[in-house]
Image (cartoon, rainbow, N blue to C red; front, side, top):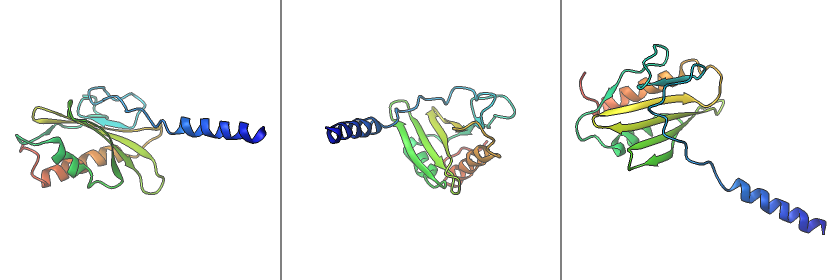
Length: 146
């Protein structure tokens, strides 16, 4: 009897674990919270502000995705082709800390938001990631001249 109960509990626990994480909501248009280690093209406050990413006409989300995946520790976590939205998980090499990089294509602009999941200082990691992405998009010829 004890073995059956143990087996049932184990099956229930495994079933609960297999549900995965629900896709995150698109937060590209939401300003960063005051405490968060975050940068965004949608936030006008100096500490959080990123200059706009103006794309050349005809640039697709797939082209942007290929460039994003050249950043260290990145993997696609969520994509919505209808809304041109992409969420990328960025994992740090040493501490294995996961940040979210969210991108949304709107007309000729790429909305960018990079935020730490935890409430600790990121020592500028999100800003460096966003600016590295800008440099790589420019090198790939996807950004329009300012």
